[in-house]
Image (cartoon, rainbow, N blue to C red; front, side, top):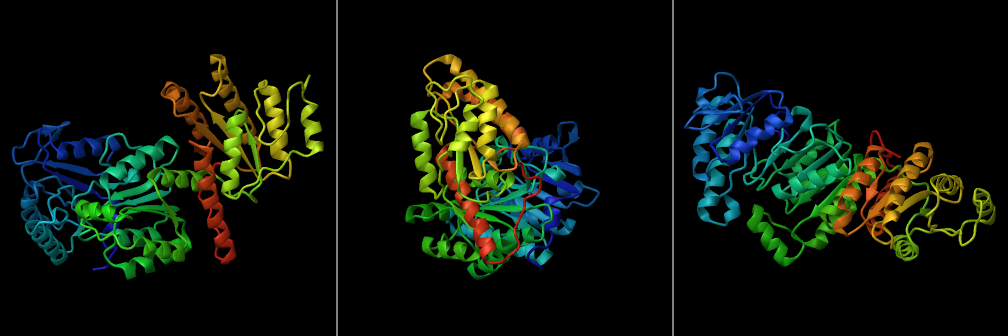
Length: 479
């Protein structure tokens, strides 16, 4: 069987049967998630006791379904799965996703044998297995989801994730910052469909421009490296490797029965392929945001606006430590900026520049800085909680107005830093983030985060240019 066989069906099934839809069960939550996502096919809830859910009749068995079934979601105990697999074989089901756990990840001989049995049935009958011990498939274009609050609109970022919890967290975290997914998969133990199958599928997927992956271990290192090399030559690939320490590898083994492998080897494999390695889930979302919304700067000369004195010092350190420079504002540009002021008393025109001025003046100065040919990129630095008087909070709203106005007219890339660890500003921060995201501006939560992500982004483009390989432009880039 071809290793990408039936994966099209996994992401766009015509019919789904959810097995184990009891009163308070995972099966019931799967049905509710599919309904909330607007699943476009036929949905069959199944439980031996029958009943009803959301005006859908709960059938007692897979055998009670008259028509074809493309996709089965299993939410029943592990000991019952072999019999379910035999029924799926008779029904000519193409894909089975196993939320069910209790297989090889337990480390028990019984769990290992159960997993071997279901794999044998699947391969004999041509069924593709996702999992066990996974959340399964999120494909918003087809209305397939395993969580009720995932966005229903599609994007061009794909996520391959061994952990179900990390999949949920990443989709939610990325959604807040404007990222939408073409598809995401939580694949658990990878007893059949594994990380390499999914990456190979995404190689040809016209809906996906950026591939991200959280991987605890691989089944076939040689094939993984070959497919990764091919994929990274066509599309940017961002990888977070879980289980990099001895203790983390031990946890990965008990989590998804994965062999983590040497961290040094992983570095070499990812570096050779040209994939971007990140160290945290937040860094992964930063890379999604950067590739999705930032146009590649022509150089590393930064114009920085906003922020107080101390915040600007730390922001400057963050920039310089990642290879960026903050050139001084030349005399002719300084004179042009001063001409917009009724008085320049107490104002020092440096870079970074603190702009606690009227919206009109802030706009003119910001526009002048961005148009100066000596700058390649503008970073708008908003640090909540640093001002002593409450009315200064309104400055962030006015500053947002200015940044959005400049961004709408800009020919150079811009990014925004919304920095606050204070819970009292959470609502204000969220409201501003929504405004920036709607304007398709990349938003970061610290200057260090922004500089790290943009540095990785630029190194990726520099490597692509130096190897004379085709560049890559994500569709609908924001700035």
